[in-house]
Image (cartoon, rainbow, N blue to C red; front, top):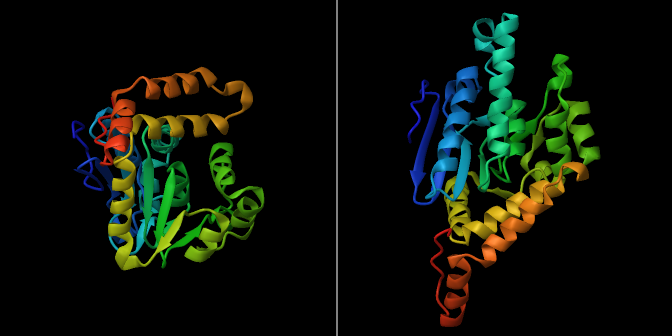
Length: 266
């Protein structure tokens, strides 16, 4: 990676075409500090520039949590002044935004607690796959916190308005099966199979034509924008680029030869 990360609480690695970003604060259930949010943005931006990375998996270190929200132990240091609050909020917004706007597929690999800011992070990802012992919740109503439009909309776009209200109104924790029923997660797998399942899933995606996959992400994201803000030309251009690509030629040739295609993303 090109970025010099200033904290050991955020890790990244690359495995073939898969990039991994790991929230590394297991002693606090991967609670997130300002510097971790800043590092998250830097790491996702590095993977954006790396043409060899086709899918990014976001996860938490250890066996107990994906991300459990904000690191309250850092509040006095990071959020005790107006200037500090502004910087903190900017770091959080940039962290979420960098994941949500990332042009390539993202998978949240969730084990254990996915609470508050962890739920916010997971909803920024394209696909959510969790272990069968995972727990989900947004405790804002137990703390008297306000929750902004963008975050609520991301959740509502996934689970719909009724489940969004239930999650916020009750502020309780939901188990993995409840999350699956709501559509919050795509897949629930046994804990011991989670890493291998996600790796195989990511490799399946990475083995497909990157320009096609990325165009679907672009088009799907445009669908959920207000009609006045949709960039239909960008969608049309992305589709046209697929048909003009070497990968389209390779896909046809591989189909006729009954072999696996070797896509290059060009």
